[in-house]
Image 1 (cartoon, rainbow, N blue to C red):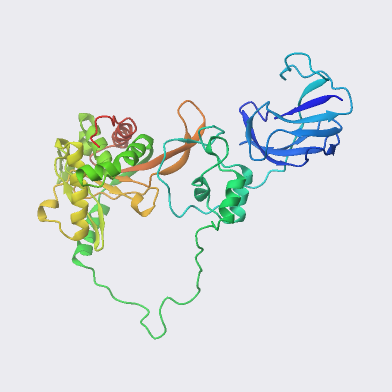
Image 2 (image 1 turned 30 degrees about the vertical axis):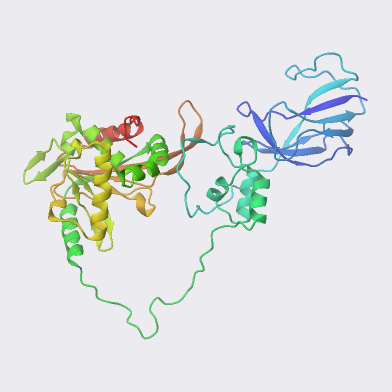
Length: 438
C-alpha cells in the first residue's frame, strides 16, 4: 500500500522550526482524512496537523516536546489510495522506492487563540545575561504557549521558569521540564496574606510626633533650595549587555585580588568622565553660584548613598585622575564609610556633578532633583531584561538601564543636556573593557 511521509509544515516565512506538543494518534491507529494527528507549536501559533488521507498511522518518528525544522518527517502514514504527485517545494526521495511513496506537507488547523496569561514578576532575578532572543533561535530561550499556560495555572513566575534547566532543543524549557519541577515540589513564591485590620493597636496612640533629625533637616533645607531652581529632566535607555557580562565574569576575581566590591558605579563614573572630556559638555559639570556659573575641568563626583539615617551625598574628588582599580576601591570605601557613619568633613561638599541610583530599590527610573549648587544630576534605574530591537533585526531581551538626567535650565538648554546624556550612553554601550584590570 502507498506510504505518505507526514512533514512538519511551515507556519509563516519567518518560522524555521516547531515543537511537537502531543500526538493524538498512536502507531497502528486508523485515521480519517482531516482527522488531527498531533498538535504542535511555533513561536507564532499553536496548531494541529491533520491527516491528509484515510489510512493507518504506520510509524511515529518524532517524540513529544521535540523541536524539529520545517519539512522534518514526523510520521509515516499507510494510505488506502494512490498518492498524487508531491508539491514542487517538497523534497523527493532519492532512488526508486520499493513501494509507492509521497511527501505530504500536512494540512494544519490553527487552534483558538488564548489570552496571554497574567504572571507575577519573579521575586528574585538571575544574573543579567547578554542579549537573549525571543524569536525561535537554537541558542536562545523562549517559552511556548503550553509552557506559559502551565506556569499560569500553577502560579509560577516566568522568571522562575526561565531559570529551569531546559531539556528541549537549544536548552529550551519544555512542558515536561515544568511538570517535573512541579512534581519535585517546585512552586510559586509564597503568597502574601492580606489582613484587614487597624494599623494602630487597641489603646495605643493613633499618631506620633516625630521631630526631624539633624540629617533630615539638612535634607529638607537642601531640597527646598533645589525646588526653587528651574530644572528639567530627560530619560533614555542604555544597553548594559557588555558591561553586565564583563562584571558578572570578573567580580569574584576582582574581590579576591583587590579586596573591593565591583559595582556598576565605577563603570558609570568612567562613562561620565569620558563624556565630560568633550568641552561641549563642560557646562553640565559646574556649580551655579550667584549670577555666575563655575565650570570645572575636573570631576568631583557626588554619589548618593542610602544610610539608616537618610540619603547622604559624599564626594569622590578628581576621579578623572584615577585608574579603574583605584576608582572601584574609592567607590567601595566611600559607600562603606557612609553606611557605617564614618564620613569626615573632607568627604562632603565640593561636588561638581552627582550620581544617584534608583535601581537599588527596584525602580526602573525616576526624576532626580538637583543637588545645589550643582548644575546637573544623573540617575540610574534597575538593570533588567526588557524587550528591545536587536542589532541586525529581530526582537529580543536586553539588560537595559534607564538613565535620567536633571539639569539647571538656567545653565543649559535641553538639547545640550540631551547630547551630554547621549554621550554617557554611548560611552557605556561602547566601552572598551579589554584594558580594565580584573
